[in-house]
Image (cartoon, rainbow, N blue to C red; front, side):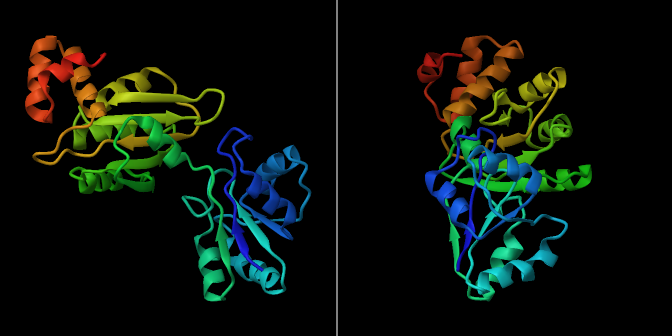
Length: 271
């Protein structure tokens, strides 16, 4: 029987597919990152099934136990606390163990904070790199951002609310204060918030405003020579220059020279 990879809501309990609910109801066993968290979702949909914990600290010990269930002809649904298992959540080792054992793995589409934030960010979506969680230690964070500073694609990372301000400060230092960013907080939840602007503007805002909840951080790519900037990049740079005291005319002229945009089109933007 197959291992089903089942995405679960990242906040709003309505964000689950009919197929995911069917699989959870039919599975012989549900492997959950935290059974206490998952029980809230299952009880909401009147699903009563045996559960086993499968998390970062016991994942290697649980693999053989879950494989025994699968190889006995019973299917297993793998879920994490929120979102898609295997993306910055436990799942990679179990999935690979199943593939090595010739057990079928079926992945269901569903909620994911990185993609949800990307499409709402206003940053380019044609090319992006998912970084997972950023390094906790400053020297490792600096090294990673330096390595990515010239990347042309949008960067997506998960960050702790307790480290967000320090990370934004490091982005300003390494990538420049005018680098466009988007901070998506508490996605799909009651206090959902998207902050779109420059790294400097985000730093100033979140230095003053308490940062709570789960954070997805998006960083605009570095324009390559000859590349035309995205609208988000033009807006961010215009806002930075206007807040620095430049006149609208001078700012539009400077941004037009750097961005590949026509000055009149920049003027037409509602800033």
